[in-house]
Amino acid sequence: MAGESTEKTGDTGKSEAILHAAFAAFAQYGFRRTSMQDIAAGAGMSRAALYLHYRNKEDIFRSLAQYYYERAQQAVLAALTPVLPAHAALLAAFEAQGGEVMQTMLTSPHGAELMDTKYASSGDIAIAGEARIATIYADWLRREAAAGRVDLAGFGDDATGVAVTMITALHGLKQGPMPSYAAYCASVQRLALLFGRGLAV
Image (cartoon, rainbow, N blue to C red):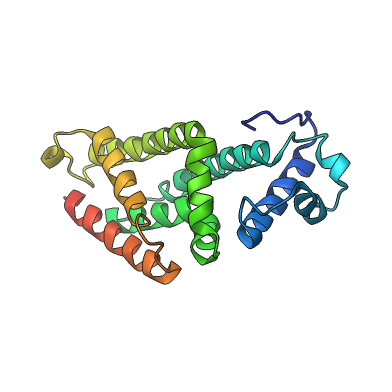
């Protein structure tokens, strides 16, 4: 995990329990109002035991961000593995990238605060995570182009550029006032259709 956690090898199960408890507490109370005691109680451990794994809630949040990006990368890769029409593959990947985390963020009254905290405390993790996800999309685009299922010629044969543009557009769906989860899902579907049709042979 990223951040300054003091967790030790072999404590993966405890660490995941802590991160799940932390995310639930952050969604319920917001980052600022969540205490280490709230997280410890949610993880079924004492506050003292929690400090054996993480120094503070900022450390936990950074590890939570790293955990999210690791899972998002795996989910996007899995979504893009089956051979599907471009728009269907992209819809599956976009939905996998956001996953349950996006649903929670957009339904929590503290979603905007959590988004701000993510970039304030874990901006470096987000940048690195987004870059790795962009690489997964770019690799998929190259494979699909080589198989004759998508056409990158109209985009300068720049798979990386298209991948970054897609991710930027996906993030743009939640800029400004936080949309409802239903509105976000509808926008994701439209975005996948737009890119899919633009790339289709």
